[in-house]
Image 1: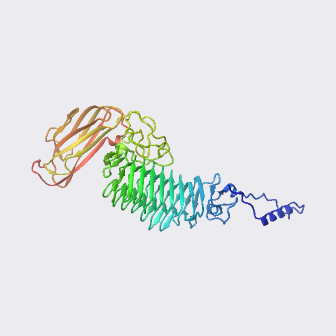
Image 2 (image 1 turned 90 degrees about the horizontal axis):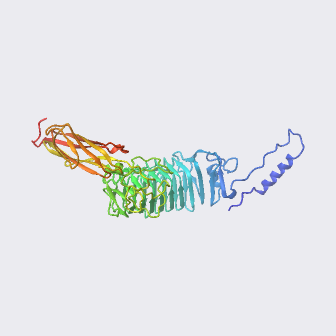
Image 3 (image 1 turned 45 degrees about the horizontal axis):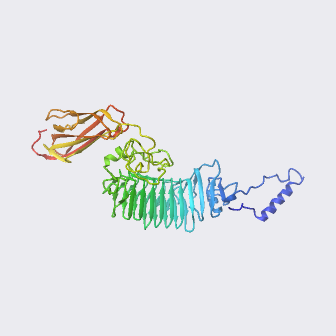
Amino acid sequence: MFAPSLPHPSRLVFIAALAAVAGCHGDPSTAPRHQPAVQFAQGDNGTWTVNALGDPGDGTCDDTECTLREAIAAATSGGKIVFADGLQGDIKLAGNDLIIGKSLSIDGAGRIAVDAQLITKAFVIGAGDGPVTLSRLTVRNGAGIGNGGGVFVTSSEATLDSVTVTGGIADGANGGGVYISGSTVTVRNSTITGNNANSRGGGIYASASTVSIVGSTISGNQAPDGGGLAFRNASIVTIERSTISGNLASGAGGGINNEGTLVIRSATITRNTASGGAGGITNNGSTSLMNTINAGNTGSTLADCGGGNGISTLGYNILGGSCNTAGPGDIEVFPNQVFSQVIDPMLADNGGPTKTHALIAGGRAIDAGYCPGATADQRGFKRPVDVVQVTNVSDGCDIGSFEAQGPVIAVADLMVSQSVNKTSVKQGDLLTYSVRVQNLGTESAPNVVLTNLLSSGVTFVEVGVNKGTVTAPPKGETGTVTWNLGTMLSSANEVATITVTVLVRGKTTITNTASVVGDVSDPNTANNSASITVSVAAGGSGGGKKP
């Protein structure tokens, strides 16, 4: 508890003199006018109230004017800074960092943005500071010559709670959004997006630090290494109930580049890209995953997992093919399955304080996970929620950061996919397509029909199916193969093989296109068609028709 701030004794004497003069019955034209009593409320109960959006101010934090910079300077260690009711907007910094310099909490109430205007860092939390808490603030356009753009933390302790850090730049160094060195930092219910570093950690960089990231989204950040996150020099990091999506590295680790000790639980890591390594996670330290989706990323060498050290699995993950799937309950998925069978490709506002990727109803993540002790997903929604139509793998938890709520409405979800026995052919070669139809939904689909349009550059040879009836063009002709499968039950999986002869000659391509429909409402029509293209090389095998 802090004592109220009191005026200096000399000032009290001056005020008393003014009061005495004001009480005289002199000429009204010359007597001083009565002034309202000065209120010295700043600092009461250890709280300072910002009542002006300007920067820097006149140097004094009082009830007439108190800027954020003045409040930081005036506040005593352990104090709290709040913003006046109704005050809302951007504080545009006038060229200097906001240096905290003490233990302090700053609560923006969701109404205040600190804009460094790409001139300076926004917040600097240095040695001897802390604990420092920034909450319900937007930190925008921080720029550092060297390390750190938006929030710079070194040799201290800090918490970012419900904070958005965006537009930060670390010019020539690390941590475009948040830079952490030799510190203990918690990032909770926050969004780190659209930041850029010219070395490592576009979103967050940590060195020799202990970091916890919970309920947060790291998206759209860029750096040569660790587009979203980079951890080095024995950092110890946990990521829980969080989404790492759409980050870009020109080197390795589009989502994460880890050289420390990293544990990830109930997270979703997807749509990250790396031009010089793994798109999802590049691991040269120790990384373990549990109940996590790491799939749908793009890399120049490996899509989802890479680096010099293998990534350990603690089980119940959905992982791309370049990852270790040896843990209990692990599921391997192919790139064309991630956004048709697991998660929605769009990062969206699905409720809660941060954006997420929703799960596909009836998809492979539903009730397939294990999250002991969990009570909420990234959005703060209940977890686990058991879907009675789906057999639980373990405790009924969904895999990833998102937990589907309530019973799934019974739906059919028809999907078609293709593979081929050759990727390059010549005129006259035989080519066999495997066209697969699946019902990923919880409801049967009646009157399912697959239509397969053959390329004009091939002629039909034969078709094979184990279910239903087929109508096909005459042998030696091109056209359409129609496959009537009848009713497909939930989880049904059928394959047709279609063999053709290559008709065209030399340096071109042929494309086979298949689509499926049924007499049922299909909530995901994006996976109802699929095409596959094969290259035709120069020359011929002699077995085909002349064009």
